[in-house]
Image (cartoon, rainbow, N blue to C red; front, side, top):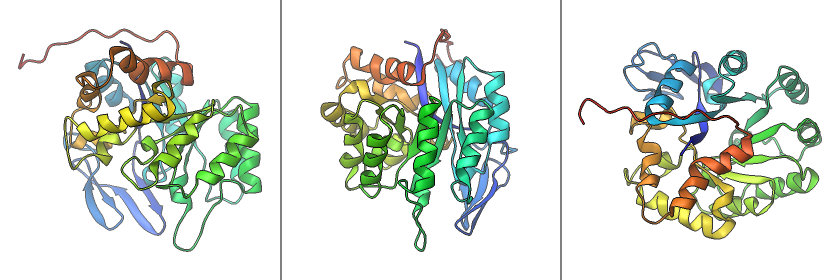
Length: 305
């Protein structure tokens, strides 16, 4: 099986601010994160550089053939670095450009990213709602940007606010842009109330759900994440397994588990058939992201075996 990871992150340095709170790389894999110190990376990444080379080494070890690199405001704008990464590793990584919707003229920003060669754009839309401000996904400028993406065959990777807060807006976008391919992240915020309203968006032909962060959302029960398996089973019964894709949320989740563990709980589950595992871990993402000529990776024994 040539496995594809639909949700990873890369950065050279975290040095940004979100809603007035600072995020900054420290040492030993730690970062200052909105007023507290968090273990952002495994502690052996002492310089805090979460690079493509480290990701690909992890992919080779875990036999993951390809990955999608998304972005988030909390990691800072990494477009310059990811443009370079895309050029270096076109057969292994698909990098999303991050549009800064906090700018006034963000449509122009999206247009620039498209001209630079990005084939997908990320919107961390859960950050569009704060206590005193909201960016509507259906605003005139936002809809114009979605039409621009649709016209240029640009994929949309989007993380939504928990529950159904932005679902009606998404329905309007889907109706307006029926050819815009949309991947909804964090498995529709599965452990939050109202998650199925997000999930049902995948009943539309152009919308898929990816599971980036599902082990974070079920972290309290830990490996082998039986609740996550049940959620995948429930989602499949609602929208079909052919609309679901695996994502790891690397590297955040590998501070608690290994990269391989972020998918092998699915491989080892007897609640999901072999055909469904192939769809979830490989074939759906290959189709959605148009991955071709995937590398075949050998299994390398650990010293402990």
